[in-house]
Amino acid sequence: MNKSTSTRELERMMDLVKYVIFPDYSDVPKWTDGPAAIREILLDQLPTVMAETAAPAVAQSFVNALPEIGRLLNTDVQAVAHNDPAVRDLGEVVLCYPLVKVMLNYRSAHCLHELGVPRIPRILTEMAHSATGIDIHPAATIGEYFAIDHGTGVVVGATSIIGNHVMLYQGVTLGAKSFSYDEQGHPIDKPRHPILEDNVTVYSNTSILGRVTIGHDTIVGGNIWLTHDVPPCSIIRQGRAVEIRDAQDSAEI
Image (tube, rainbow, N blue to C red; front, top):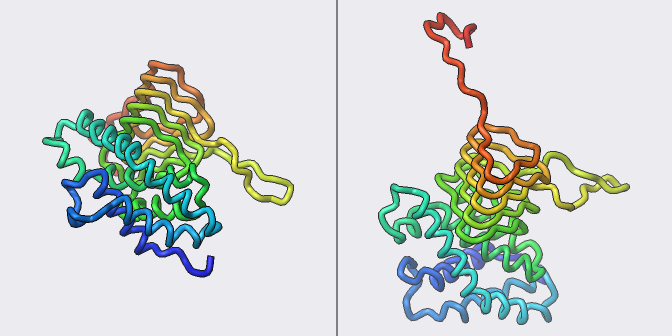
């Protein structure tokens, strides 16, 4: 670990990952051996954060995982197309929707996190966060067919668990309600974020906080603060807005 991790090299690696998964929508030259190039970057960058002797096995494991990362990412693309009638073709999703960059980086980062790689997974997800405004921690667990519409302001905490066919809209937070501390006053890393079961939809600007479970096939409306479990097949919504006619000034609001 004699040199710093290069964000430029990691950005280049993610370009190559996108090329491997979506070759028709990449600027990488077609003759490039993507997996070999990815492996070389990892062999160079992994020793900046972990033992050099561990780098070859981790790099090869990541390359071996690329088909599964690609399969999962293609389910995400299909989920966006299924949930947004504005989509005209899958290529539009790949090229135009922020979810693709976010999930490309998240699914790659999650794989590296599962392989025990420190720091680099966070760098990868922060690259996507900076570009899209969507913040997904690499330790979060997300199933197949995950969709985010619009997306700006979405936050998914480290111990969140998201099932299959889940849809989030902009401004949704899956966060912690409180923290526990050890005797030295350091926060304890334990499960503290929500669990969303299969087929859950959460509308815009809703915060779901704490280790609560949102049951399968549930719809959570917008602008809701939710800190308790919800049974399956529920609809959660706030009270109706109050309309005040002929208000003379702001005192009526």
